Length: 203
Image 1 (tube, rainbow, N blue to C red):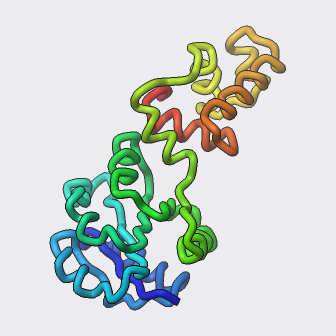
Image 2: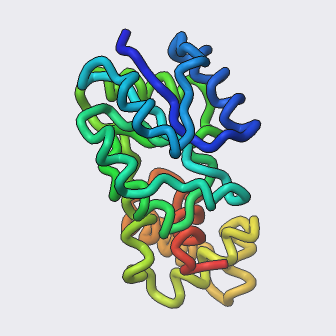
C-alpha cells in the first residue's frame, strides 16, 4: 500500500473525508494539510508514488480552492480529487491539475476504493462525464429539441409524459434521449442530466 496525504480546507467535511479514507485505505488521519501548508505537505511526500488526495471545497468554501501552483508543488505524485458537486468551471479547474483520479464522494466507499486501486495500478480514473462537463461550457452539442426533452426529463417526467407535454410520440422522445446519451457519452439519463445542468444547457 502506498503512503497517502490529504490536502483540503479545514472544515467538518475534511474530517469526515479523512475518516472515509481511513475506512477505504487505512489512511493515517494525521497526514492532513491545508492548501496553505503545501510546503509541509511536500515534505511529507517520501516518494513519487505517494497518493495525494485533494478535497475540492464545497460551494460554501470555494474561497479555499487549490491554485494551479499548488499542484505544481506535488506534480510528480498521484493526485486524486475528492468532490461533492461540480460546475463546468470547477471541472475545468480540476482537470488543469492533471489528476490521476476523481471521486464523487456521494458514490460511496466502494467507488472510492475502486478509484484508488485503478490509480495504484498506474491507470487513470477520471470519468467521461467530468471531461465533458469541462468541455461543455464552450459549446452545446444538443439540438434545441433535445434540450427541451432533457429539461422535461430532468423534472422527473417519464418518456410518455414528456411526449404528451411536447406533442411528440413516445418513441421519438426515447430516440432523443438515446441521441443525447450518445452525444454526451454518458452511461445513463441521470448522468446526461448532470452534465447538461453543470454546463448550463438546461436548468
